[in-house]
Length: 233
Image (cartoon, rainbow, N blue to C red; front, top):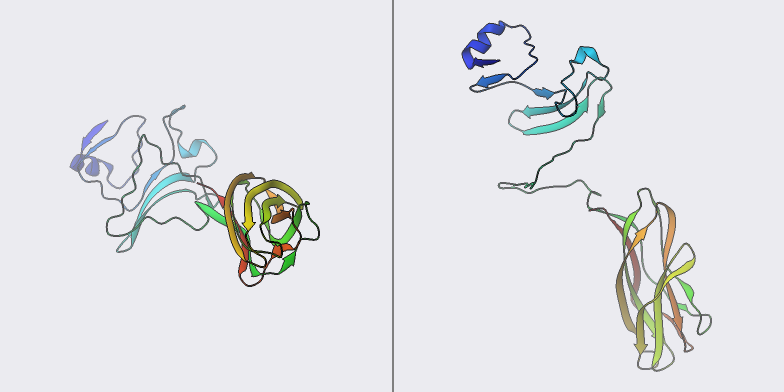
């Protein structure tokens, strides 16, 4: 069905127009809201009176002098729906502004520890969990980025200090960093970044340490820290 802009508007005379085929409008279509409630993909268009969920649809809205909105919403149940933007290449162009994402979209800080702490290894040649720990509850599960910085001290010259990461009280990744303390009581700063898959649930991620020489540990002159971030995009 094809109508010119003037004929189409006059023929309606204020009543609803229903078509089972293509409607071509030649001219400017100026409306308050555009709402799509069906799809020709996989099945023919279904009229709202023929099925439950008639209030569901994709809407194109404009708020005068403010902004425009594309949204998927179920007005029957007052609930938001998922919205997909699909295409071979998708480009977002902000003219005179910026593209903003809600907090937690690309990444989310799960937990951290940042403090000056003095702590000594209880014995040599054994791995121990340090007080540098981050506890958190992760609802989604994904890729974790673990960042660690520590102020290391040893009373033994040329001591080798080994650093690793543990999850929930067990050493998981040992010897992620190896530090040599060249002189007695010399402070050395060590840091590393490690990526790994993290399961959903409540967890404790901590820094572990081991040394083959006596007198090793952390020093509170500088802050030691661990940051666990979930990368979502």
